[in-house]
Length: 281
Image (tube, rainbow, N blue to C red; front, side):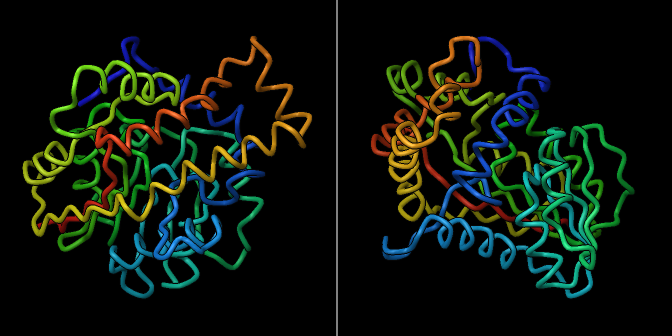
């Protein structure tokens, strides 16, 4: 597990997403996560929607079932589950700006309840969901055991947990940890970057079977190259983006520089990306 030198409180994570919400919406759209490219010719929108679809398909949510989207962002994946599976979905995020945007973008006919709160403490009924999905959320929750235990508590027997996330290599070199992984944690307001083995151990220790780690690294790394290009274009064409980027009082501007670290981390093997899935006994 990689952690920042100075612990990241939940308030800093919420501030990161509240402050950057307008830019995420303009540059990333309704899905603020990696994309999934097959041949490299897909647009960014097509790629991020494909990753969301892979996660939804892996969840095997029964039609008319119930799902919880942990770290739901602007609600893109929650809307996909509610629309495709006629599901009832609860979306959880600690960002008030994301809750507002998600509610504004969600048609009234979809059964989605967006809630502002911390996954480790939010009040949800036990054994009431068929699937729990988390796209790039566990790195914002340092307590992986607590995260998995909460999934176990709210899932019905046979329910599925799907975690789509980037992972630290099990044995990073000192320079990778010092110059890539730890700064990524700090600049991106992460509490930890876990390993595949830590996810497997936590799931197995909390009553999950059929644990699978599907490595899709080669399909997602294009995300950061395109992000750098879009950011460079926005620096030239978007006055608000440019003013924030060069404003020393805007603390969350550091995220713009971490894009370069992501590219290097993937290329050197310090980071991998996987879809981790398991079934509650």
